[in-house]
Length: 223
Image (cartoon, rainbow, N blue to C red; front, side):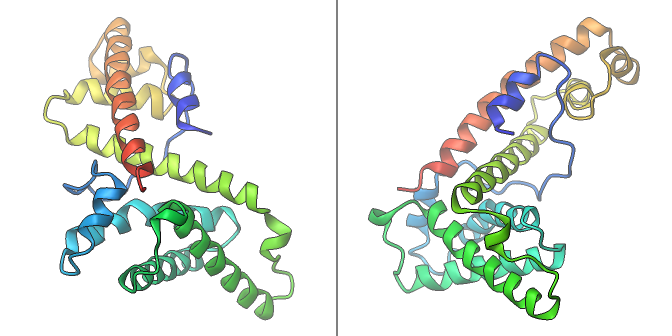
Protein backbone atom coordinates (compact mmCIF):
# COMPACT_ATOMS: atom_id res chain seq x y z
CA UNK A 1 0.00 0.00 0.00
CA UNK A 2 1.32 3.41 -0.98
CA UNK A 3 1.61 6.27 1.51
CA UNK A 4 -0.95 8.37 -0.31
CA UNK A 5 -3.54 5.63 0.04
CA UNK A 6 -2.77 5.20 3.73
CA UNK A 7 -3.11 8.91 4.38
CA UNK A 8 -6.30 9.11 2.35
CA UNK A 9 -7.85 6.22 4.29
CA UNK A 10 -7.40 7.98 7.60
CA UNK A 11 -10.67 9.80 7.07
CA UNK A 12 -12.19 6.39 7.82
CA UNK A 13 -11.03 3.61 10.11
CA UNK A 14 -8.27 2.37 7.80
CA UNK A 15 -5.23 0.90 9.49
CA UNK A 16 -1.91 0.13 7.85
CA UNK A 17 1.17 0.81 9.95
CA UNK A 18 1.15 -1.20 13.19
CA UNK A 19 4.79 -2.23 13.56
CA UNK A 20 7.68 -0.74 15.49
CA UNK A 21 9.60 2.23 14.23
CA UNK A 22 13.34 2.53 13.84
CA UNK A 23 15.82 4.42 15.96
CA UNK A 24 15.34 8.13 16.68
CA UNK A 25 15.98 10.25 13.58
CA UNK A 26 19.35 11.96 13.25
CA UNK A 27 19.91 15.62 12.48
CA UNK A 28 20.22 14.58 8.83
CA UNK A 29 16.76 13.08 8.60
CA UNK A 30 15.35 15.75 6.29
CA UNK A 31 18.49 16.33 4.23
CA UNK A 32 18.11 15.25 0.63
CA UNK A 33 20.01 12.23 -0.58
CA UNK A 34 21.97 14.55 -2.88
CA UNK A 35 23.09 16.62 0.12
CA UNK A 36 24.10 13.47 1.97
CA UNK A 37 26.06 12.22 -1.02
CA UNK A 38 27.87 15.53 -1.32
CA UNK A 39 28.79 15.35 2.37
CA UNK A 40 30.18 11.83 1.87
CA UNK A 41 33.20 13.29 0.11
CA UNK A 42 34.48 13.77 3.65
CA UNK A 43 35.35 10.18 4.59
CA UNK A 44 35.44 11.12 8.27
CA UNK A 45 31.82 12.32 8.27
CA UNK A 46 30.44 9.38 10.23
CA UNK A 47 27.02 10.95 11.01
CA UNK A 48 26.31 11.22 7.29
CA UNK A 49 27.33 7.60 6.68
CA UNK A 50 24.97 6.62 9.50
CA UNK A 51 22.18 8.72 7.97
CA UNK A 52 22.58 6.93 4.62
CA UNK A 53 22.53 3.60 6.45
CA UNK A 54 19.41 4.56 8.41
CA UNK A 55 17.66 5.67 5.21
CA UNK A 56 18.28 2.53 3.16
CA UNK A 57 18.87 -0.37 5.56
CA UNK A 58 15.21 -0.74 6.66
CA UNK A 59 14.07 -0.76 3.03
CA UNK A 60 16.58 -3.41 1.95
CA UNK A 61 15.92 -5.58 5.01
CA UNK A 62 12.14 -5.47 4.60
CA UNK A 63 12.36 -6.15 0.87
CA UNK A 64 14.53 -9.21 1.53
CA UNK A 65 11.99 -10.49 4.06
CA UNK A 66 9.19 -9.96 1.54
CA UNK A 67 11.11 -12.20 -0.86
CA UNK A 68 11.08 -15.02 1.67
CA UNK A 69 14.39 -14.61 3.44
CA UNK A 70 14.65 -15.24 7.17
CA UNK A 71 15.33 -12.35 9.51
CA UNK A 72 18.97 -13.40 9.78
CA UNK A 73 19.38 -13.68 6.00
CA UNK A 74 17.61 -10.35 5.45
CA UNK A 75 19.96 -8.69 7.92
CA UNK A 76 22.89 -10.28 6.08
CA UNK A 77 21.64 -8.93 2.75
CA UNK A 78 21.23 -5.41 4.09
CA UNK A 79 24.71 -5.52 5.63
CA UNK A 80 26.25 -6.78 2.39
CA UNK A 81 24.34 -4.20 0.34
CA UNK A 82 25.37 -1.21 2.43
CA UNK A 83 28.96 -2.45 2.74
CA UNK A 84 29.20 -2.80 -1.03
CA UNK A 85 27.72 0.66 -1.48
CA UNK A 86 30.29 2.17 0.89
CA UNK A 87 33.13 0.45 -0.95
CA UNK A 88 31.87 1.37 -4.41
CA UNK A 89 31.16 4.98 -3.48
CA UNK A 90 34.62 5.31 -1.95
CA UNK A 91 36.07 4.07 -5.24
CA UNK A 92 34.01 6.65 -7.20
CA UNK A 93 32.05 3.94 -9.00
CA UNK A 94 28.69 5.66 -8.55
CA UNK A 95 27.84 7.95 -11.46
CA UNK A 96 24.80 10.12 -10.76
CA UNK A 97 24.37 10.75 -14.46
CA UNK A 98 23.59 7.05 -15.01
CA UNK A 99 20.72 6.76 -12.57
CA UNK A 100 19.28 7.34 -9.14
CA UNK A 101 21.07 6.16 -6.02
CA UNK A 102 17.99 4.22 -4.96
CA UNK A 103 18.10 2.27 -8.24
CA UNK A 104 21.79 1.54 -7.75
CA UNK A 105 21.26 0.30 -4.20
CA UNK A 106 18.27 -1.75 -5.36
CA UNK A 107 20.55 -3.43 -7.93
CA UNK A 108 23.15 -4.23 -5.27
CA UNK A 109 20.43 -5.60 -2.98
CA UNK A 110 19.01 -7.68 -5.84
CA UNK A 111 22.34 -9.41 -6.42
CA UNK A 112 22.86 -9.91 -2.68
CA UNK A 113 19.44 -11.55 -2.36
CA UNK A 114 20.19 -13.84 -5.33
CA UNK A 115 23.47 -14.92 -3.71
CA UNK A 116 21.75 -15.79 -0.45
CA UNK A 117 18.91 -17.63 -2.19
CA UNK A 118 21.36 -19.65 -4.31
CA UNK A 119 23.34 -20.54 -1.19
CA UNK A 120 20.17 -21.59 0.61
CA UNK A 121 19.04 -23.64 -2.39
CA UNK A 122 22.31 -25.56 -2.33
CA UNK A 123 21.69 -26.31 1.33
CA UNK A 124 17.96 -27.01 0.94
CA UNK A 125 16.63 -28.16 -2.43
CA UNK A 126 13.09 -26.99 -1.54
CA UNK A 127 14.17 -23.34 -1.40
CA UNK A 128 12.82 -21.32 -4.32
CA UNK A 129 15.03 -19.15 -6.51
CA UNK A 130 14.48 -15.43 -6.98
CA UNK A 131 13.38 -16.03 -10.57
CA UNK A 132 10.53 -18.18 -9.25
CA UNK A 133 9.53 -15.52 -6.77
CA UNK A 134 9.55 -12.13 -8.50
CA UNK A 135 10.38 -10.36 -11.75
CA UNK A 136 12.06 -6.96 -12.00
CA UNK A 137 8.87 -4.83 -12.14
CA UNK A 138 7.55 -6.65 -9.09
CA UNK A 139 10.89 -6.17 -7.35
CA UNK A 140 10.69 -2.42 -7.93
CA UNK A 141 7.12 -2.42 -6.64
CA UNK A 142 8.22 -4.18 -3.45
CA UNK A 143 11.05 -1.66 -3.05
CA UNK A 144 8.58 1.22 -3.40
CA UNK A 145 6.23 -0.34 -0.83
CA UNK A 146 9.00 -0.83 1.71
CA UNK A 147 10.41 2.64 1.05
CA UNK A 148 6.97 4.08 1.82
CA UNK A 149 6.72 2.06 5.02
CA UNK A 150 10.14 3.28 6.11
CA UNK A 151 9.21 6.88 5.36
CA UNK A 152 5.99 6.59 7.34
CA UNK A 153 7.83 5.05 10.30
CA UNK A 154 10.39 7.85 10.19
CA UNK A 155 7.68 10.52 9.91
CA UNK A 156 5.95 9.08 12.96
CA UNK A 157 9.22 9.12 14.88
CA UNK A 158 9.84 12.76 13.96
CA UNK A 159 6.27 13.58 14.95
CA UNK A 160 6.68 11.94 18.35
CA UNK A 161 9.79 14.01 18.99
CA UNK A 162 8.22 17.38 18.21
CA UNK A 163 7.78 19.52 21.29
CA UNK A 164 4.57 21.12 20.05
CA UNK A 165 2.66 17.84 19.89
CA UNK A 166 0.51 17.15 22.94
CA UNK A 167 0.82 13.60 24.29
CA UNK A 168 -2.95 13.04 24.47
CA UNK A 169 -3.44 14.33 20.93
CA UNK A 170 -0.77 12.00 19.60
CA UNK A 171 -2.10 9.04 21.57
CA UNK A 172 -5.63 9.62 20.23
CA UNK A 173 -4.25 9.59 16.68
CA UNK A 174 -2.18 6.46 17.24
CA UNK A 175 -5.06 4.59 18.84
CA UNK A 176 -7.56 5.37 16.08
CA UNK A 177 -5.32 5.47 12.99
CA UNK A 178 -2.57 2.97 13.76
CA UNK A 179 -4.21 0.49 16.11
CA UNK A 180 -7.79 0.59 14.84
CA UNK A 181 -9.32 1.51 18.20
CA UNK A 182 -12.86 2.99 17.85
CA UNK A 183 -13.06 6.72 18.58
CA UNK A 184 -15.22 6.30 21.68
CA UNK A 185 -12.76 3.81 23.19
CA UNK A 186 -9.82 6.06 22.32
CA UNK A 187 -11.64 8.93 23.98
CA UNK A 188 -12.04 6.93 27.17
CA UNK A 189 -8.34 6.07 27.22
CA UNK A 190 -7.29 9.67 26.52
CA UNK A 191 -9.94 11.32 28.69
CA UNK A 192 -11.33 13.08 25.61
CA UNK A 193 -14.71 13.39 23.98
CA UNK A 194 -15.33 11.68 20.64
CA UNK A 195 -15.30 15.09 18.95
CA UNK A 196 -11.95 15.88 20.56
CA UNK A 197 -10.58 12.57 19.31
CA UNK A 198 -11.56 13.42 15.74
CA UNK A 199 -10.05 16.90 16.05
CA UNK A 200 -6.83 15.38 17.40
CA UNK A 201 -6.75 12.83 14.58
CA UNK A 202 -7.26 15.55 11.97
CA UNK A 203 -4.55 17.76 13.46
CA UNK A 204 -1.94 15.00 13.62
CA UNK A 205 -2.85 13.67 10.18
CA UNK A 206 -2.27 17.12 8.66
CA UNK A 207 1.18 17.32 10.23
CA UNK A 208 1.96 13.72 9.26
CA UNK A 209 1.11 14.42 5.63
CA UNK A 210 3.52 17.36 5.63
CA UNK A 211 6.30 15.25 7.16
CA UNK A 212 5.75 12.40 4.74
CA UNK A 213 5.94 14.82 1.82
CA UNK A 214 9.14 16.35 3.18
CA UNK A 215 10.80 12.99 3.89
CA UNK A 216 9.75 11.53 0.54
CA UNK A 217 11.27 14.51 -1.25
CA UNK A 218 14.47 14.12 0.78
CA UNK A 219 14.63 10.39 0.01
CA UNK A 220 13.99 10.78 -3.70
CA UNK A 221 16.25 13.80 -4.34
CA UNK A 222 19.33 11.82 -5.27
CA UNK A 223 20.38 13.40 -8.54
